[in-house]
Length: 87
Image 1: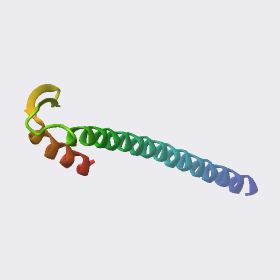
Image 2: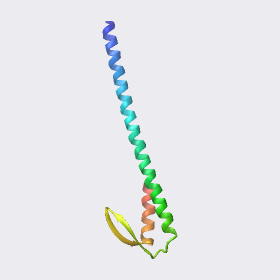
Image 3: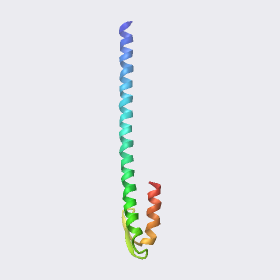
């Protein structure tokens, strides 16, 4: 009977270890995503800061869905701010 209890305890410990490993993996995935989003936010802030100092009628280029489109700074700046807020 003691062997059965030890076996059950060992299986329970294995399940705990597996659950811990799964939680650790989820934590690492979440941390990676947070770092990615923080990087995107900083990139947006740099571009927004640069464009605020430029003439609003000046043309600029923006990648939309992998396609480079030509717009004016006045058109792009609000879109960048919205994208930053959404990130």
